[in-house]
Image 1 (cartoon, rainbow, N blue to C red):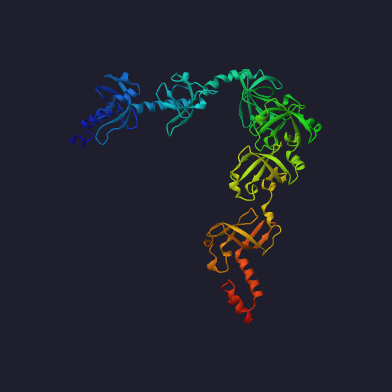
Image 2 (spheres, rainbow, N blue to C red):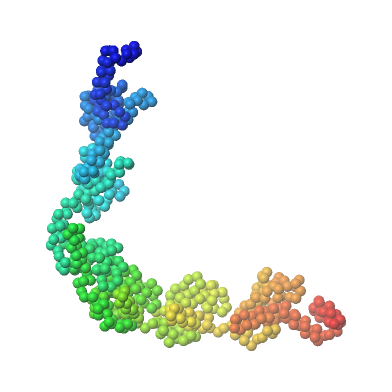
Length: 575
């Protein structure tokens, strides 16, 4: 180390000169691309000599093959690599040929993007949303969105795969190292000059014959003219009537005549109109009256109705909503009733000049079947019907020759049985006679009943009154009481457990086995509400009162079959 003590001596200066000359040949710095020469090749690795490094960097042969540098694997060949580490924890030099290639390719992409120059690439694979494009010169990869492949959608892209072609770089993310390219921009740029020449052929007022409807947007409809130009018909230029969306008037593939209303040579755009081919029909709308029938032509069918045009006034289109097709069909299908070109009768129900709107109805051309039913069949009339549908609690019955489905609730099926059980006896197609119970014309609802056509077994109580004694037969017993049927009546009633006897000990339903004939009294009777309550207890109380009134002496009550009668008589005598 003595040589470095005096840097002014000739030996120190000579050593410094040699050292500087040696280091100046190669700029050694991590993160930089440097060039190395192959000086040794093994079965799996390539050893490089890079001047200025203390050891030889090693490259995997597979890495060189993956970046298409197989022809470079020769002694003496020079390869550019990225110096990642001058010395790692094992004391070795780390380099990468693939990263060096990617960085060099990225620099070229950045340069092309800044200069707005196209690059040459190949579509090598399909991915979600588009394709992967490989830069031919550097092997760098970029993303090509599906919408940027061509001006119009392409069904078969196989002819474009792996074919060198020009691409424009439309987006570059320097932070993430991502590039987005476009083939469409290259194609459209070539066509701009051609498009300018085509547009020069058109002037305002020209009539274009047979333009084909190509596509929709929220603001208008696009038409293809002679396969050389796409023109726009704005939403407001489609019809004199109000249009919410172009698909209400046009179908893809249809051909229509257009009138040129604007030509923009700078933007290379031509605007057209359909409605201006004919005079404004609303100028003659005063010639038509409300609630009067006119002929309309069906021009387009939709799920929610049909667009129609007044035959006498071409250009005036209006919507026939599905709710105005039929009186009786709730979800009538216009596609099943009409087809495009049909001429049908409709009534004009509304004319709004400010909103340029005309409302029409097809069902108003026919008599309202609900009004007809109300006139022909007053409430209480018995008519012939057919079961056309049913659900868990009702039937729907078609009334004679009218297209009306009347509602028949299970409660109106029978007087005797449970309504839901009675409902199971009926099926579609059954012929039944029903009574008209209710007809609401405005709401288009009709209610009918089956039991109303039969004799009401409750009429048995018409000549009965409260406290009257009736004889009944016990049908069944349970913990709640007795099920009984009055003699001569077809209806069953319940005597509650609390109404079986005065004494709680005797109020046991188990005392009866069923089939016995017993007397009871009517404790409640409401003919209007069809409500009757029967009670054995009440009958005992009535008979007990009669006995007290008839036999006032204390002893006389001891022979009566009532255990508490003697005590009641004693209380009476004390009073």
